[in-house]
Length: 137
Image (cartoon, rainbow, N blue to C red; front, side):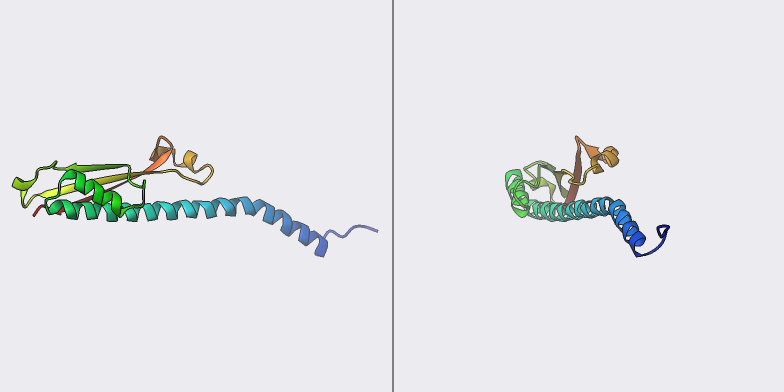
């Protein structure tokens, strides 16, 4: 008797092979979406923090106070650097703009994504930068 080339047994094995081929790709896509979501979240938090720093700085606060406000507006350790221009004191600069820039270096969790995004990465990390400008009062 010849074995059947088609039938329920053959289709179950085919489905198992297809699932085994697609599963790793689906897992990488899922982790990639998580990386994108983390980058989007950090970008929004960074934008809000530097905007708050620019708001405080436009009212005449010194640089140390601006840095403290920016760091307090973000989760601990999120912002690695703050650049404030023009430097304190700013009393004679009314009507001009203050600029507060914050930077965050994000490590990607998706395997292989660092290789694919190598031109966009600095030291293996995705660098997010945000600047807020407001008029000095």
